[in-house]
Length: 362
Image 1 (cartoon, helix red, strand yellow):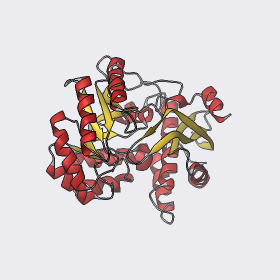
Image 2 (cartoon, helix red, strand yellow):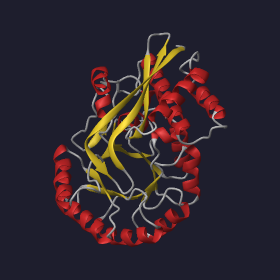
Image 3 (cartoon, one colour):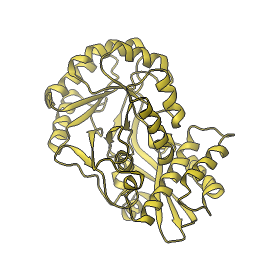
């Protein structure tokens, strides 16, 4: 099953409503869609993205360059070898940013081709450990919403069957954040889990003050309370609070995970499939986390993260984000317990919806 060609397409996926966090204003996600074609007629698929499509052409150029130099002509099952060769080749340009995002899209597509060729879902190839995984609704409760809007949306998530959700923080007035969390907690009751995400908004002292105010609301975690590079600050916040600290989505590869763990800055690691460098490296990072008994929860890439969750015992949840749902024919399945079902379809379990993608390119 040699790879005979790699195709790329750029598509801008609009969000239903523009949203805002403490550091983002988002109206769409620009994606590079990657098709890896094998001599057996199998097509493996992956993608990388940028917020609002900014600099997406650079990602496409990097995917094409890496594919031509290191992927085309290889056997798709040589995933580890391809990854290692690309890693070495990236030394002059760096192991963060566009280079790793492009690497990830190719790696995911190669693994998808392997699963489709073997007619097995990836989590069974890697060694299945579960059929469902806890999740939390993450496509709402944004910083730009009013308290009334938060309450209505939170109730809507419960009606949809979610048993957990995430609210964004980062208001200039700390008490406004407290009021927002209180309103959502009151709306969903004590049985529904609530996560909070500050999107790196605060200084350590600000995060500690807010975190102490929020401990009355039994949060699952306080996510990215400080800038991702401030590992000392994150460690200070972690020591000061009883609420677990989740972070890692902005870090790259196993080495970013290692730096957070060694700094004692994290309780729950949140690797991002794109920044990790694809399935191959994500699994390395998760294995490292397991040696320190640190839980892993995947960051966005909800559809493609399910294969990982189905094979990693230390994965405690998958973030349910609907941004990329328009790309796929298949939908994520939320069961009666509020958990996502790990798909038993070959490969990653999701295929690009060509008709909808064509309509977004017009």
